[in-house]
Amino acid sequence: MQGLSRLTDAAWFACLGLPLTASEHGDARAYLDALGYPHARIQAIASWHEAEHAARDPSWDTQWWAREDAERERLMQRARVRLGPAALLDRLSAATELATESIHAAAAGAAERAGIADAALVRAASGAASMALHTAALTRLAGEGDAHLFMRKYALFEAGRWPLIIVSGTFFVF
Image 1: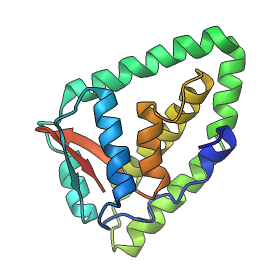
Image 2: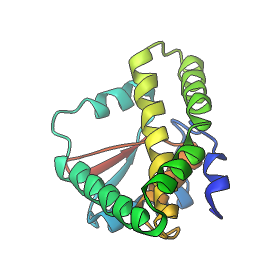
Image 3: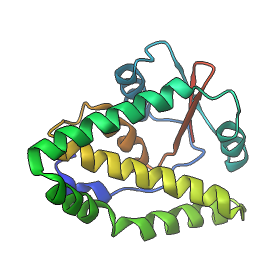
């Protein structure tokens, strides 16, 4: 990705259920390695039903979420120092606010094509993509590059995927 202007140019949810490409597998592996999960397996999800089942698994890895949350906070602090609080908020808003509706529409369209009418599942998918867009923009504003874990995760969304969750040492990607 070249900059913030590219952060909304994604094939949102266009490749759900397809086998992972070598590039997507590489982005998933780089994301896991950067997050401290070098031995985690990567498992492609084939359907919305499987995605919902994985997302609802009560044994999901809470450490995964805590690590992402700590990294988001680190980036926020760094970006605040670089830009100041007001400019950071303005630039994050500008980078993400226009994409929210298109992301939701893409998730709804993908679900509809698959015969899925679960509004909550569509909101979960679009919310995850919106968060990935936000963290990718934050990563850029903090001065980090394409190798950063949030850029790798965003690359999966950009490719039309939905990176879901880590459960029992397995990273599920729809």
